Length: 260
Image (tube, rainbow, N blue to C red; front, side, top):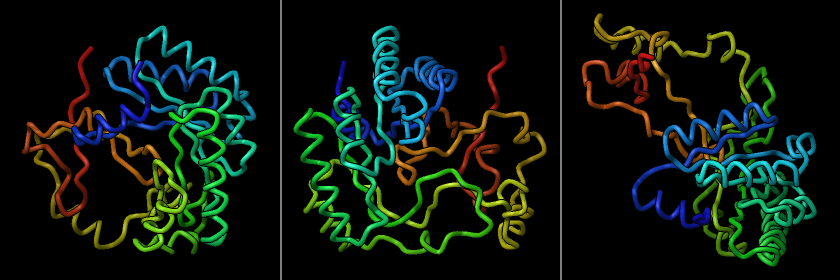
């Protein structure tokens, strides 16, 4: 089976993305891996510190290893948002393919020092493990917020990103680019749209013969790290009349759900 490093390299050369999905129980794990099997694509399964505590670090590693062998599919495991050196080493020892080390709430120098320690410790366990560092505060939970946290408005600068990457030697960098963890209450109620977005939506409705969002397959926006990608393996651009719900609104595409 290929390594995660090889899978990421292949994806980059082919201008593709590898989906990352957090799971906290066997039902979600089975759903993610079965979808990857159906689509014949590699996938990254993520478990946060809380999810690992619930699941069991060695337990989820064993389950992913078993599914990888049974399905003969590149299924990789990421220790998402790991805040301690001990947690990083524990996941690496258990057989995780990737450690997402997150010391981003600390000042830059402290973040660099802690992340470098994590890189050295994890690579000493297995040099092939991918280590991700996080720079800039985007949060790490799934809370419901009343307003956008002020911390999410502070973006990572290119100078800090370059310095961080060179000093820590991380394999993957997760910078703050304006995104955030969790949801706003207005997202749940459906009132998050701005006046300009609503106006653009009215001007660019799909033709009457196009399917409505409720009757089509919708592609989720998910990431290898929260800020990193949008999977596109099932997007359809072959029907330009119904390709989008308005270029002024978004580039998200729709296609009819397959008939069973």
